[in-house]
Amino acid sequence: MVLCGKPEEAKEWRRYAKELGREDDLMIFHEESNFEFNPLQYEMTREGEGAGETMNLVNLFVNIFKMGQRLSGGDSQESERFWENSLRRLMNRMFDLLKLAGEEISVANLVEILTSAPEGDGLINKLADMKEDELSQWIEGSYCMMCIDTANGSASSKQEKRDFNLVYNYFLREFAKMPEKTRTTVSEMFLGIAEPFLSGILNDYFAQGLNIFPEQTFEGKIIIMDFPVKKYLDAGIYAQGIFKLLWQQSTERRDIKKYPTPVFLWVDESQLFISEYDQIFQTTARSSRACTVFLSQNISNYYAAIGGKDPRSRVDSLLGNLSIKIFHANNDYVTNQWAANTISKDFKDVESYNLGVAVEGNAFDSNRSYRTTTKQLHYQVEPIEFTLLKNGGESNDFKVEAVVTTTSKKFSNGKNFIRMSFNQTT
Image (tube, rainbow, N blue to C red; front, side):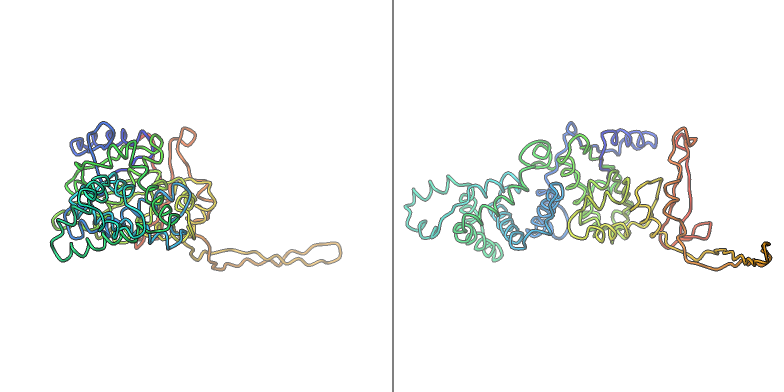
């Protein structure tokens, strides 16, 4: 699974695949590929326990909402709890209604339910007083009411009847008589999530249809999400971020006895794609036989991208679960300090000199001098050393240097880190 930050990323992976005889394993998802991935339909129809659960569908949408909040500079964690709960309840009822009515789970249908939902106090009593032909005409004029009418006739099991009662009471009582300001706010929150999927590439390739699946990587396919951010901007982040999330979840629940092939997630410019779920995924990635590679220019990019309250602890938690760290030349103070702290300190022999000078008349006697050696705790790699690493190019004879550290390993130098280098031309 490869995400693309830059337009040339997919071309590079084509070259890698050709060199290694893996061209037939490439699945490049772009505008001319004929692939479609409706995340809601996927979550409804995928294999495994939990498929089609309303709560999972809602959580998927909330994750999309949080992604949008991050892109717009906000933070869903800072929203009032009342509004988030109200949004979740609205989505719960809309998803249940579409399922009960046998309608496709799509963004367009969700929006249609919301925009055609009836409003007004005492609505149920008004419906009871309507004549049959008047009621039929009123129902036909509202997609929401058509779904409710269909669901009423199809709900047969105890669970379905319970869900229908919740849906019925919500749309004809609670939501219908909700104060205008409250209803508008909740509606706008949902429409804000749905808006990106109503036009452009998200509407064309991520709102309907389903013919590419995250699970195909378990069988040796390499899925490249060729919607580079430099070209598609926020739409590219949405598209790739959604597929990445569902790929991570599918990887976590896969049966590694049935699908033992190790898988990888490659994300250059990774600060563009990080989410709260990355930290959760990394805690179990090893047991899922999944390797994650995140590349970024500096750690400050992550702090800025994740935003919200206390971004440092959230980023540090994520990076702490990435076991191998590779540090190249960097002038960012925060990154270099973090790298030095990550590699940690050790005792070093530090020499000190004491020179005793005695004055006898106009002559100096410097016969008494002392040299002592003491062990002191210092950084194994000082922050300044990361600024001096060679970064390739003709001036460095195309040599690139790095400091590598990992957990539970001593390198050949007996340390938890080692200096490495490679030649760009070879």
